[in-house]
Length: 263
Image (cartoon, rainbow, N blue to C red; front, side):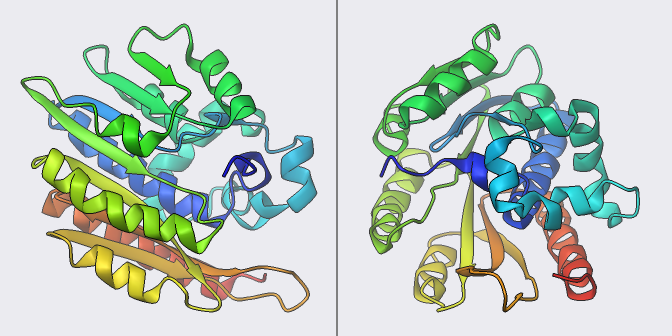
């Protein structure tokens, strides 16, 4: 579907887990001097104004990243938050810009986005970066045409909107093909936790596909707000134990944080 625009949800609690895990993963790969080939299937626009019209309409960033920028955030979140602070809330880095900021001159990035306005914004944000290719195309089919070069570590972020049940069916079909296509690639998948638990069977299916780690957290629900979500999860396939430990620390700290803050 082409209706989803992440600007309404940028910086929310799901973003906090997703981007902190991505930051921890990239940090360890860069520190280990891996030459990285980074791919995103659903990129969005790459950069967001958390004070802008879309973000203010939902106010989701207030309970997310904006609640953590006073210096009192859990320790495992602080490395990512430093990157956010350096960028500023008017130029909040989505995952494409976060990756571009962290990766080295020898790395390369290919970013897919189908939504025309989102793609235009993504392209304009990163068009001057010679390491980056942006593609207005379906990320699932487009990514499967790619392969890492010799010596590259491939990292793929899969972050669909899950607007419909069909989105889960599509990902369920795609993941086994991706794992076969890239037998050594590291893959990060974001999964929302719905109030009606529609993701439970799907999440179990994903986590059983191959070796990996899973981390997540739930937040208290405000009965006065219309929401379909009660938490968020990241699944990481084929990452190192050190990355798995970092993921666990992030998820555990967020669970504690969200259980003690007001909605």
